[in-house]
Image (cartoon, rainbow, N blue to C red; front, side):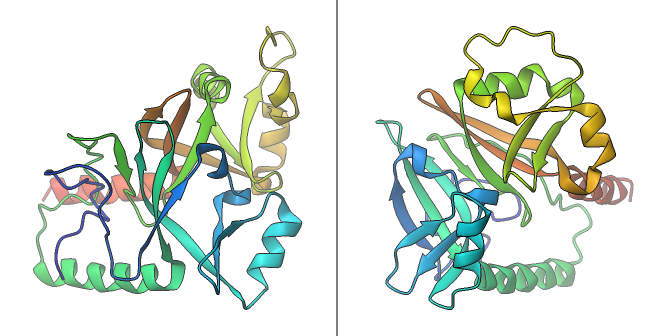
Amino acid sequence: MDENGIITGKIPGSGSGIHKTYEESIIRYNQIDYLRAYNNQYFMSSEGRLCWGEDEEDYNYYLNNSEYTKVDILSVECTPNNEFVVEFIDSKALRLHLIAEAVERRNKVNVSENVDTNTLPTVGVGMHKTYPESTFLVLGEVEFSELCRLSYLGIFFSKKLGKVVFPKINDVYDSTGYSYIENRRVYMSVINEHLNDYIELSILNVVPNGDKYIVEVINKDIFESYSAGNERKLSL
């Protein structure tokens, strides 16, 4: 199987624009505000139409309807007019490819190979999936600013809300310009008491696109397991 960058996160180094990764992958053109699915999960209808749930009820409808196939985002390319070209793939097909690639890497017995280089693209303004478990978020300026400002507290994803939440330790803050995300502020004490409802995230890559930001994130525990594996490889 040819190298395709799905693990290393590399965008092809020549030319520009998005590149098809697998034979099953599908390219779609999306307006920026549409890349905001509940739990960041997307589905393809039997007619090839991209669908996503805006809440848990919508998500469960698509998940349990045989006319819809769950798909994952493979890569995202920003366009000059601040919209997206997105590469999707059937989740089951992606899993089979990743298993085949894992077997191939194991057979090569290359102990010096890094699973993650976190390499940002050298040309263009695209982003490619770094790990099988990583996913993409699209945040507005206010959301991204809040994410950075509160990052010392950790970055959390609420399974109940299906979106990033912003931890707080008290009610003293300037809420000017932040009113529309007030319902996503959660006390750290609440997060600590209900850890099963929250996933702590690590940021892998960020690409600005107009007044929005594409952020690639991964479960922090999974990321640390990869990092520990890489440290063991590098010590050999």
